[in-house]
Image (cartoon, rainbow, N blue to C red; front, side):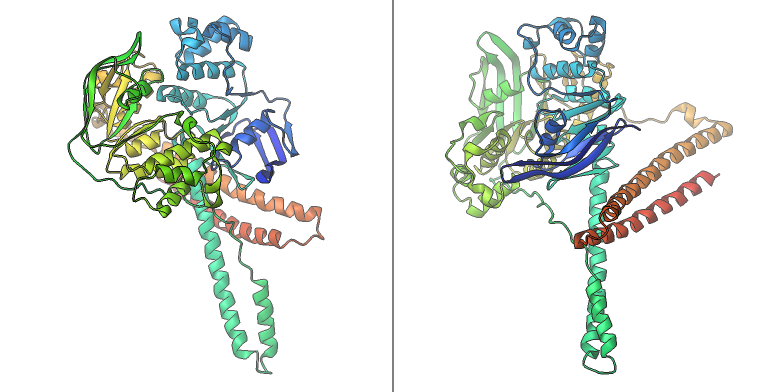
Length: 611
């Protein structure tokens, strides 16, 4: 393990707003780090400071001479009419065969390798950027929101590559499943500080919850002890014979201090104003053709969608998902055929760039109040604003000062207040942190109306979708299987087990059910013994990983305590109440983590000695 990058006491402010405050961390060449935090916490700012795209206010960054850093370009760096091949050769200064080999890993082969980049859909352009980034032979990557606007096929290709990448990286993402599959460390940016944890995102949140539970338990014990001592003092302080003992107890009370718990960030909760649940058909489509003058995107579309269905519209970028939405929303005229919404249904449409229609002089509350349906109260409006991270005084902010992500969240919040029976949502999860994404999915899951949505966030789709429409090669079809089967099909396609031009819906493919082989059933006693030993060794390896992870947790807390002790060594005469409380907190945590580590070690030894 080689430390490639060290950031020390980095601070960054935008006016009075603190983004980073004395943020410190070090990153090694073998760490796959997922960067998490609420919107506006400073994740992207940290990446821009590391890559030199933004200046820090104070602090230092030191890079190992062995570090070869590369990052995903956020803007287009292509020349007009430049082909994929020409761009990769020019931009990376690599040989054509090297460029072709890397492009092929992202399924940019043959005609696509020779195609003008401007003719490619957004997802394929991102594949070109990824190939260019990796051709520079980096050993450390910076990826800021690489999953935004990526179709699922490209996302899976990126996951596969990162899982095999020999080097370290920082990935900022709001896609929990993407981080779970690609990262073994977690860096949280919260309240200006950085916390690097040796475990994936699920393990980190479990660690945080356990740590908080232990602090509360410790504080409860301290308060109970204080109450017992105070009772003694109250009973005996007036008596001369026991006054001195009572006085010593009072000193003991003063020495007992609880651990201060940092103010937690508020939990995202979301409630969508209800609409009346009705049966029947929400949408009928008959021989519909969609596209633009001179260009048909998809045709021969025949569908019936029942009211109350939650329909995920899936497919690669450029296949026509947004065109389909614009057509059924009435924003784009059909090229042929027809569609019909059910009688009396109110329709709301969230498009990726609809926030451009906001009034700059409106504040957040004014916009939401205008959008809200009759009967939606002020508290409902404020609750919805809070659900999209506009809390307290922030509802008075003018639209003109909002970022693009904030405007998108504002439009989405306003749409959910309209009490529409039909929600058309094109990429609603972009610009949302994963806690807000999951809260939105849970809220929509209980929504009695009909939802059509485009999203590549697997957690969001898995939570919400009751039906799947697949768009590919000019056709729109119902997918007959589950979402898990749909994803599994694309994973096989990414491994090139299935041709790229075959669609999930047309294949009718479903994931195979596990079967017991005849060979296993007919194993001899000797074969079975070998199989049992092999299984035991696999269990030992798996349990060893658990022990190593727990050891990492223990060392993580010990390093925090050692850092505090180092501060004391540097300035032993400086008294800090906060520092003393921190030592107590860490000491409690170390004892707990040490007990877990020893228990796991004991279990591992038992497993190893098992016959």
